Image 1: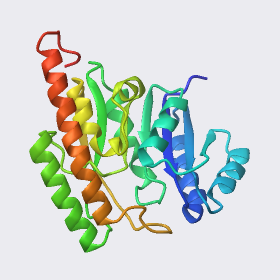
Image 2: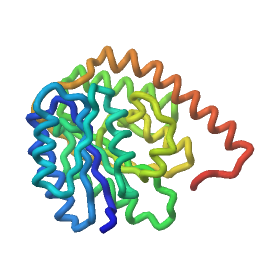
Image 3: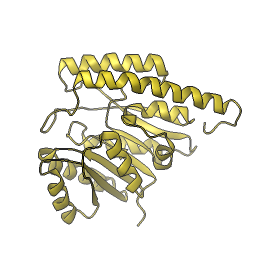
Image 4: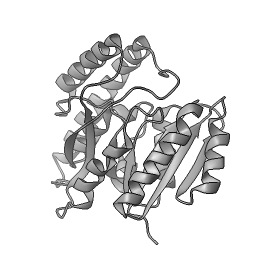
Length: 245
């Protein structure tokens, strides 16, 4: 049976979260009675994450596991999962358990119910974040700067809960950390973007893969690059027909 929705989960060193998170995702999707697939991407884990996912795949028919031989980053893991997906609609969530799988239907419904064909992305917007104060402040500053530069109309692009048309995503220019700029990239290509509030919770295990300093330094170059991509698309479209509504 053709799949309606694919759930892509990037994971690195999340052995404590892998089992419970996959169980939650599968339960939510089965309750929705949609044909679905789950693709977990082991991004070069050095703990038992990869082995645990392989064992889960033997017991869960909807689960497929991809393995990166060495860490390539969250964007690369998401990209690998989307390429492997067969469903036309893809949802993503972080592998640390902070994104509640119960929120997934909020993401796929606007896309599955879109009769216009114009909605390309649904982006979760976290409320009552369960992060440290320093991380929340750093994120607030970064989101404010990004919104000012890119005018993407989104208050929280760091949320892992997103859904999009697979073909739209694969048409985006690929670069490291692109997962933080999906609303801007979608609008750049003429797609409509829907924003939905979603819950947030404590990490199940482990710790963040990035420091605030790492995010800040990488974000400066990324922001400049995305702004350039948007300007280039505007110039191209000035002499062409609109891509989407």
